[in-house]
Length: 307
Image (cartoon, rainbow, N blue to C red; front, side, top):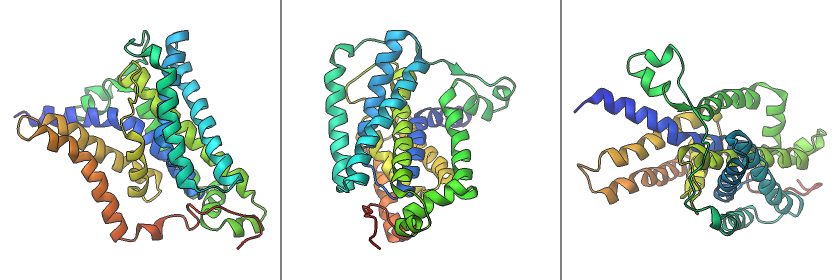
């Protein structure tokens, strides 16, 4: 067995499959840091996937497709914000409704696009010089997506914003104690709207990546539960953008190995392995008191004047 080729292949594909997971998780971290749970990630991703493909196929530019995906994802998230932040509806019910709506609406609109390959997919990037490094070169710097590197860069930037800037203090204070933040002059509703819109845009791009690069075509339900994995990874990362990178690489690496190991293990077991890992992570997180790490007001609608 050529272990070097296994390492190269696993790292390379883990980065590729992990790209939409990372974008979605980073967006969800910011939404939940502001105190709002959005279980509509799957719905926003599938709407982003359809929008990106339809625009990219129509105008011939995958970057415009990704921009459209971001706008559609943000728009869907703002609908969730209207119900949960302004109308104070149950956040879990609203998120589930958004996912159901996204899956159904994208399937309806995308019926005529099924089976059509994308004419102009997003190009891949090989980093000069670094791609020649032994093992790590072909694994990390050869035939990767621009969105992969942008996502890793965003993880660092979003960590710095969250923990080293005044904006980050405002976001975290709104998620921890919105009444206190409100008393200090922070517009709690605006912060939550903006964080939800940002999370929706990130989820939209995550879905758009699937249809304009990873599998450059449109297929109904092509997100295949990726949005739910994003929710698990958000908890696994303890709402920390840098920890999200390691969680994404671990999950996506297991996902790739599920295909590589089919010669030795039953394929049904291997396909289950990544998702079993996600369930195990959530169970361990619960035993270790993940709720203590979560924002204090997560999932709780805020009414001005209430303590």
